[in-house]
Length: 242
Image (cartoon, rainbow, N blue to C red; front, side, top):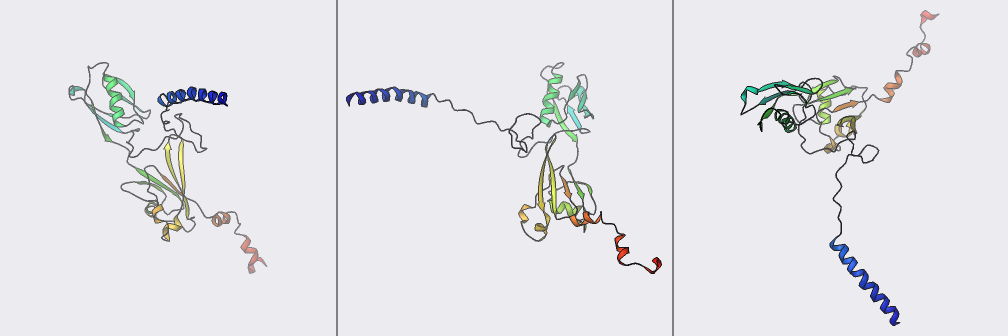
């Protein structure tokens, strides 16, 4: 009996210091960095995966945007440039740099690095002089399909009203396409009938810049396309046939 107690005490004395050491020197892994998740649910940090959405994201410059670049200490280098179709801008005395898809602070940093080769600690200000205006697209079974300026907060039902309203051939279930990142689209399905009947008003989503709203055609209308209208002639023959 004494032997069993002695063995148990020895094990306790051996494990306790190890447990204490593990608590004091435990390695706590940092929280995982957020990664984009594809539609299939596989987490993958590659650039071709959909990026996580940000709150209040900064505007990213694109083709045909106009940038005003000023040098407080070297005003002779002040210039206005347009982003070319390939995403580059040509800088005075500093060559070309790629800026498409960058925020204005990122563009400022890129241009500063370009001029650091010929100027000592350059101070540069970049202002977005002209840019692509926000828009949304409505297509499908509406009176006036097309692209519309997004000048103020607009919901899906308001966007349909702006495009002339639904046609009699329209289905009340619609799809909203929102670009998450390059090559990736988020698609949401809405039931416009609920909105019109005063149900689920809070689910009337706000349209985001670049969104496309698609209103499909009723199934019965699609079916009629394949029904030959001449069938009615056999049911009601005229006297001219005899």
